[in-house]
Image 1 (spheres, rainbow, N blue to C red):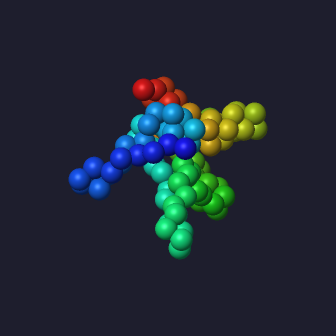
Image 2: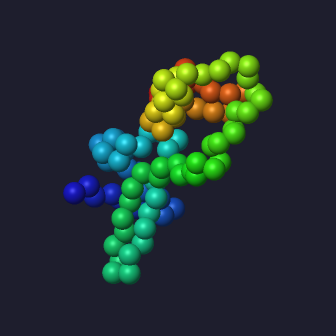
Image 3: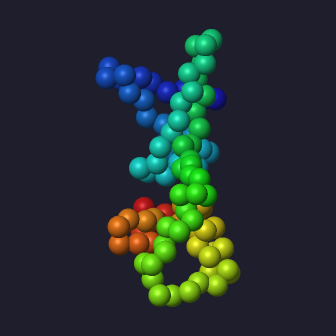
Length: 98
């Protein structure tokens, strides 16, 4: 069990071992569920999405036609947090770097 110290500002710092166990990297998010008996449960916050939001997302934005293998690789990399997206598109080089 890890014991954390609360600062005068009401903040705590999780040790590297805890962050690694949760799979959270710097800048990542943690969810805290407060239970009625005074306990809390923490877990890494994972992005959620619906397939409806994904379908047609790239329609008309490229002339390249991806193979099913390329689509599967891109989807797997995205769900694994290996690709970050912004207005300019995917950036495979910045995700996961410290």
